[in-house]
Length: 203
Length: 110
Image (cartoon, rainbow over all chains, first blue to last red; front, side, top):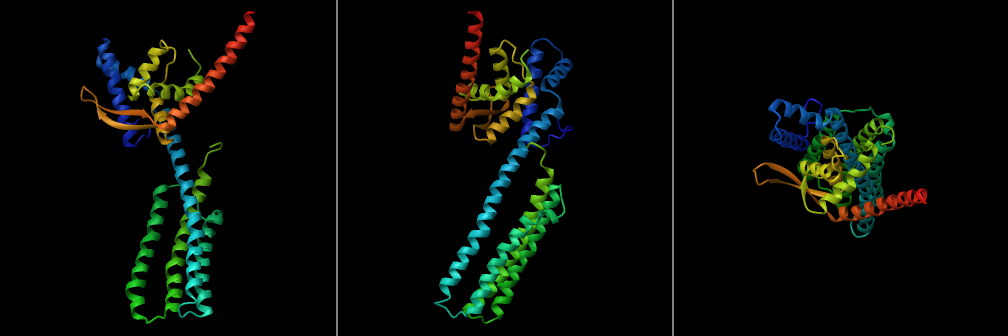
């Protein structure tokens, strides 16, 4: 089973336990150890067929998880700009914020959404990376610099500048949201193109 | 021997109905089906496990690892609420097919 590609510990362990039970039962019925083993393996069925069935289960699970993830991303890329945009518009009348600053903050939020969606909508221009580990590595290599940038921005850049509230909101929206939009867009696009190209017919 | 398409289609309702009697594990489910069908419903043993995993993923059944009285580790499956609903639906559909077939057969002998 391992040779056939069933690597996940749970199915392997379950199949191994099944084999042991069947061998035990065959030996109780009078067969010797070798004959019991051969019979039990035959009854278990061809390893590649079992593997194919497990792969179908995994694909269904992954497809559902991805669908939920896409719903989450869609909601996040619509609701977050709306929420923050609302806050900016509401606060701008109370704090020292010029019309240009207000517009710039709103532009940063719009850029976040557009960057995130550009990856999803323009996925066909991105390379097809079938290897899941490489896709995970790309996601990781996007998240690490993003977090480093946030640390630099909040710990080094912000304390050194005496921003007004309006300037702070502009700097924050551009520094925080725009890189997140790039990161989401790139990974959303790469994941979409990989899934669209690998989905078998009729699945 | 029953056609493999029918064997595959009947796997889910049979597993659900067996688990409605209480929790069980893969090997026991196969033996039970074999015994109840006098060996005519012969599953390829390994094929049951992907079916169980798919049903678990769909939220029809749940599983837990436990030790048997002999000390052997086993994965026990039991029915969830959605599984009971799915079982009722299966029974309804299979009963309908059965009644249509029975009616047609009766007509042939009249």
